[in-house]
Image (cartoon, rainbow over all chains, first blue to last red; front, side, top):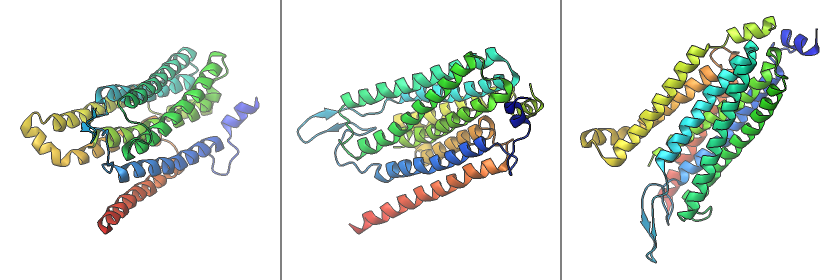
Length: 209
Length: 113
């Protein structure tokens, strides 16, 4: 019996739970507090900007310069749907890994990575578009809190993509057998957490005026 | 597949449950955007007028439902150890209290100046 198989059969811990899974949940708990601070800051300063541009309203500066509203709801709605579907794709990949179905594992994990890349691409496009519309990081309170919150979320998505991409490479090389499915499950838990953070950010930032 | 891997997989929801959750998540997202658009455009007028005072509450409830679905079914908290649920839910409660306290504190501060 290999060491990994023995480990999978009898996790040698006092809780009876795998230490790596306990660690990722503890880490996710700390990340909840991190994003609570960012979301709390965004909400506290919401609507407190003295100058535009503003998220939902047009604005004309005292010098007569006209600024359109910032948010493009259809684009971000599409990005949100893609991120939600990526969570669906990764649970199917995990089911494939646990069943030893390599085709299912690699196919759905690839779809997850593609969806994640699309989301990051959407965010890069969105940020550059907002900059062109006149919203810089230090333009007003809205710009500072918006870019900080969504930028940190985007950084988390990027880290999740690197993690899932690494697992995908391992899966392609045949190094994710069913007894090592936990390697994917840990990455998937982090990915789902990034998804639930966006589930909060989307209505709070984009839909609430 | 090892016995433990098989048992672990069987403790998770099946593909049908995952598909059902995905459909519900997509529907709830569509409802969120629909509520926003109705209030934003003011059309239909009667519905917009009725929805406007409660749209924030509606968005929060829909968001909470989506959050719970992903946590319970995709993150497997419904089936996994209660310890994992505790490690996730306790910080969420603290976070909610923190955000509420910040909002109250800053609202109070504004009344002073």
